[in-house]
Length: 280
Image (cartoon, rainbow, N blue to C red; front, side):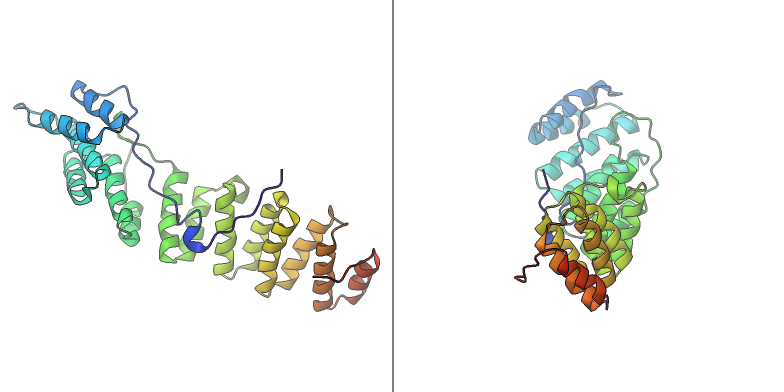
């Protein structure tokens, strides 16, 4: 089935809606038994019960291993964030990092708080300056290269830093545009328009229109034509028309573009290749 083009406004795009991945707490191989009931509550979304369990555990009159205490502080921070107490959550995550710096989970809580406040620059700087190595601990989280750079691209998008968006998407999907989810490809198309880059716009559009209905593909190519990139639009229409030679809409577009490009003979050939209805 042909896909329908969405091309939402910038503020409703894939990147504008991209969020920090939530911590899952799905580990069953925890290094301290004291963490098990806390993790069970977190996994089940029982934020208040998890908070109470963590506080009760940390109030015990015993000496904690720094990693154990850090894990409890991190879980408490995330539970508080989920409950809407974002500033206490940020502070608790900071305490966890003081105890056990080589972790990602507490950093994720902090950038989640910043992004939730729409402080995208602070979130971007925080994430881009991280140097977390392999923690070798089971309670920490993992963020893939794709997720990391998509996050950085999303915050750059919010800040209108188009070149940074392009750089991060290239790092997120080094194998190219075809490996991206379709909504993200649509953002790449917008991005090429914002950056006034006809080559990138054409490359993305050529992939997008493969699975689009005729009228939806026409919207994409018309966006390129309206940028003044007539030659690129002509190339795309020509390729798309090859398998849809019965289309009156595509033939009209090709005739008009060929005339604009001074290719009168080709325009005549297309006009004479079948009954060309002149209705727009």
